[in-house]
Image (tube, rainbow, N blue to C red; front, top):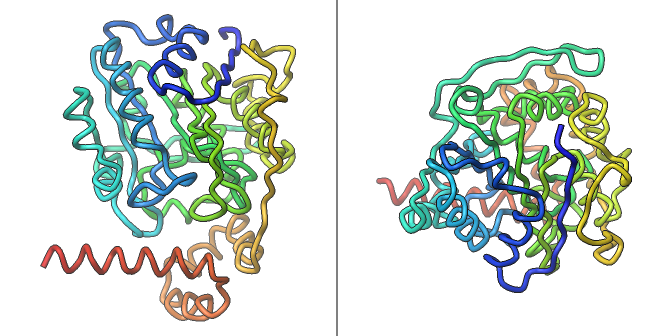
Length: 339
């Protein structure tokens, strides 16, 4: 394994900042001139929201640099969870068709592509994930471009958690059991070689779909997902025991969490912030769905689901209700536009 390298910088001029970071982590040794690369953004909403989805400006500049180096550049995402919106909606909401036209990149909806189920033993337990054939057989380099944010269930949502969106099933919420191991397995199978964490805005308090966005003007680049997720967690002040998937991935030999094994351009301490993860009542109840696939299916994909969601609607706090209502209005507008 190459030396794990992390580059931290404040954003001044996006393209220059990206290029300096890429050169520091040795990107030309990773992305060859004949490479096919795949870029996975975080589009956990059907349009851009600061601190929640990857910034279109960053994606445009990064795709421009990649297309100037690689033979073929593909950006892709899966449909939103629980049939909430399609990846095509997210592409439109983040101006991806126009960005790809300008940069020469391609975009694909992973939920529309052939996929495989793969089972492997992770930390003493067999777990299964589903991934598109494209990511397993047709690319030379996986690139993860997440947002710097906390996550109410996994502690943080950084490079490895971002890869959960490669699971092409819109009902991947039914497969959250053993998520820490599954994230490690997806990382092991897709082998992300470049990571750019978008800290233009970071997300505090909740995540992944709402919280408190903070303007931080930060970019973190790396050639290793474990190392960069550990640094991102430390910058946000989230202890690693709250982000177990990072430790599981380290246990699988996917990267270090020991600072002495990581080469950095600067000390991470000067970028330190103090974020927190605040669970609501419904979050605490939802923890049960991360432990039981039976309960997950009962709540989200059964004849009981409408009744359960009806009861839950009365228990949502204002932020939860705002997200649900916003997505419902969005879907209604889409439906009316298509009539």
